[in-house]
Amino acid sequence: MSDAGPPQGAKAPSGGSEGHAVPRLGACVILDTNIVLDAFVFDDAAAQPLREGLATDALQWLATPAMREELARVLAYPKIVPRLAFYGLDAPQVLAAFDRHARVVDAAPRADVACKDADDQKFIDLAVAHGALLLSKDHAVLCMAKRLAARGARAQSAIKSVAESCPPGPWASTA
Image (cartoon, rainbow, N blue to C red):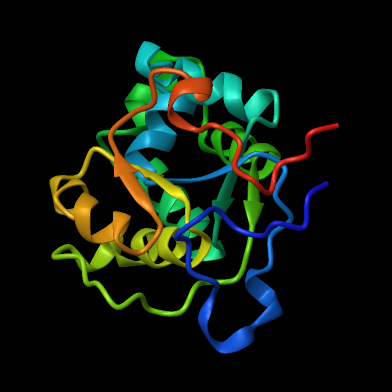
């Protein structure tokens, strides 16, 4: 494995906390709750490259305990429970998919950019701290794409393919 470090332009986590050190297996992605629902509940075709990337470790999904708690809360919403039943799922199955695919890390320090939607700030903070791709459908997040790019992170609504959108960085193994 190369010792080249994080992707070019990515910022190291502030404060020197080892809680944010993440071995790079694949390109790091942060998934907001709606993207998790698309991938693991609604079986959205647009989420297929994401599911493939997670299954093959081409993508490394980073999440925090607060993100898992938010997902658990959303899975109990009255509008979501019937959708789970329609797809033959229940909340524990979706949370098990989260646990299987997500690498849970410590919450990141607050980034120097603020999201208009305070509920989304934790996703922004984690993306900036890890120089990661943040997948979201939320306009409050997507409109921050340029500000995030200036800090070594990216925001977009979906990935067309792992190879096109999340190429391995200089930290990836070449063996």
